[in-house]
Length: 198
Image 1 (cartoon, one colour):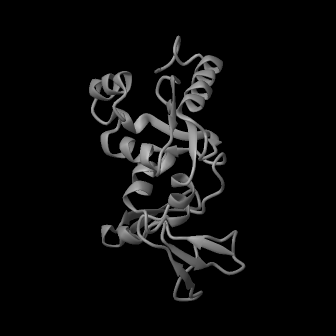
Image 2 (cartoon, helix red, strand yellow):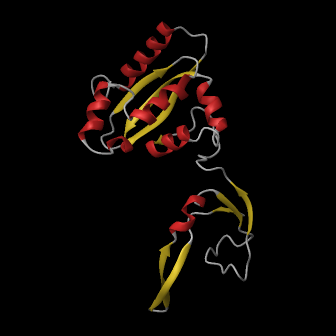
Image 3 (spheres, rainbow, N blue to C red):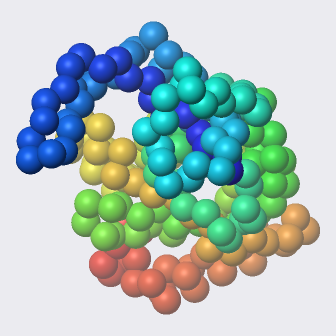
């Protein structure tokens, strides 16, 4: 069974309560750069995660590149929070599959404000497709949209409430007029002009 490193901890003592042991753990900052990057062969001991390394050595199978987001599962099969979007955009070499797919298509996308449930529908087209538009959100937080600017300015780090997904991919030979028509249809279907962020 494979496992991924989520932390390295130092044991700073323990206490016993009613026959159960509770450990005082301190996470070591020294190894944070390796978190979610090291893949370990955990063996056949999936039920016993509290193993002693000196008695059951674990082989490192793979070290993932810094900023790696994970496998690209398809244009319509993911939702990214802002931190994931930022990691993706800032580490294109570690996420080549993501970049290749998102930059090769035009599309209609959704930004969900996880705090209020309000939605923003947008479209992306051009030489670098969805990737280019989402790069603007990663860098500016609002992509130049007036309502998103106002929300982002209302509270520090408010943009971290945003979640990003693709609603529909569009062919590269589609016209700007056709893209706007499809985008407006989504706005009507989801009510984002009356009740959302459009």
